[in-house]
Length: 215
Image (cartoon, rainbow, N blue to C red; front, top):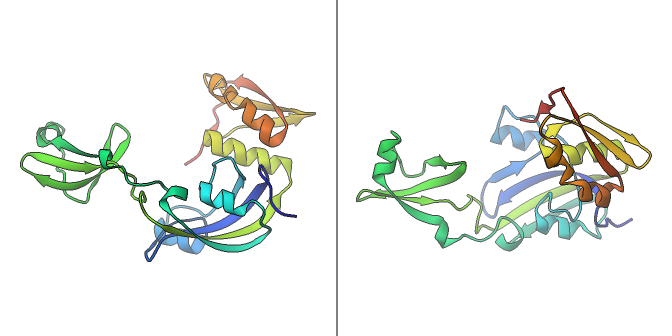
């Protein structure tokens, strides 16, 4: 049966820059080349909720289990380059922080990554555009199955939204989610999402136990 919005799918994927290298994958062989310390894991997500690339999600609606290859323009992938994101920063800022801005280096500016383009005349040109902005990319996507198990759906959604593993229980049409102190108000912001995608009423319970953080 063709996939519809909010169907949960398990996929394997390989993302390549057009005419270039692999930049992302959850296939063990490819992931090992990108980061030998990272373990390949299944990727389960609901269609039409912007939890994968929008261009891929739109493509998969109406499709069935199988392998696909698609080329995405920046519009449907990682967006276009924004000239205003290329900024000049005085060299004295780097001197004050004892940083040597070598061209090509990626630096963290208040949790915002920027690439050093040039260093000249007491000024440093930094590009805050994402490294894939403006690039055409090619994705090989293998849809392994449509996920029907409610526990798998809940687990994947919780991990995606909160980047943590929380204990939970499903009772009737309720999802009882245990979170640590101070996290309740944030978790409750997603009540509508759980209702829309899983038809479950989210009830958040604060507990003393600390959740396991995702790496």
